Amino acid sequence: MSSTDNRREEFEREALPHLDALYGLALRLTGGDEARSEDLVQDAVLKAWRNWDKFELGTNCRAWLMTILRNTFINEFRRDKSRPNKVEFEEVAERPPGDNLFEADPEGRIFDRIIDAEVINAIQALPDDFRVPVVLADIEGLAYQEIADLLEIPVGTVKSRLFRARKRLQEDLYSYAVEMGFLR
Amino acid sequence: MKDQRPRNGGGCEGDAHRSECEESLEKLYDFLDGELPDASRDQIAGHLERCRGCYPYFNFQRLFLDRLTAAGEVGEPCLELAERIRAVLDAESS
Picture (cartoon, rainbow over the protein chains, first blue to last red):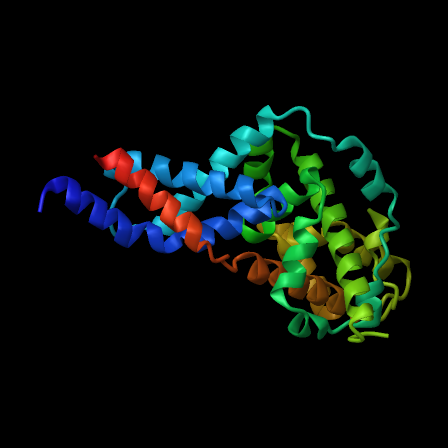
C-alpha cells in the first residue's frame, strides 16, 4: 500500500466518523440551511484533508474539525454584510423578557420531556446575530471574549445578545410546552 | 438587567438582602457561564446557599443551559454528503 493510501485510510478512520457531528454544528450555525451546511462541511473536511499532516494523531480530531468548520463559517459570516438583521433585531428587542417558563415549571421538569429536535428548532429559528453567539457559547462552550473576538463585536454586545436570545428560547419552549399540553 | 429577577421572591426580605439578590441576578449568566473571577463567583455561590428565592431560579437557568448544550451536540445524519465528500477526496488524491 502506498503512503497516499495510508494517509487516506487514516483520514477516513479518524476524521470521517465525525461528519454527522460537523453537519449538526453547520445546521445550528446556519439556522438550518441544508445546502449551505453541506458546503460548509465539505469545505471544512477538505481543509482538514489538505492539512492532515499537521494533525497530531491521538489528539481530539473532532474538536479540531469543529474548529475548522467554525472558522470557515465565521469568515463567511463576517464577510456577509448584507444580512437582513435589522428588522429581526428590533423584533427580538421588543419582546417582553417574561419568565413564563420558570413560573410555570420552576423545577425545570419540562427539560426532560421536550425533545432535542424542538430545542434545536428553537435555536435555529433565532435571527443570525442571536443564534450564532448562542451556538458558540451554549453548544461550543466558548468564552465571551473568544466569541467577541470571532464576531468582532464588544463583549458587552455578546452578553446582551446571549441574554436576549436565551430569554426568547425560554419563551419559545414555553409556547411549545403549552401547545403540547406539558404545561397549562 | 433587572428583569431577570425571579418573581416568587422566596427568601428575599429586607433591603440589604434584596440588594444582594439583585447583585446576584445581574451576574446570573456570567456566573453560570463561568465568566466570573473567583471572589465574585464565591460570593454568589454563598448567596445561593442562603437565598430560597434565587437558588431555584439559578438552578432552573442551569438546567436550561444544559438542555441547550445536550440538544445542540446531537449530530445529523448526512449519508449523501458523505458520498459526495469521498468523491471529492478521491479527486484530490488522484
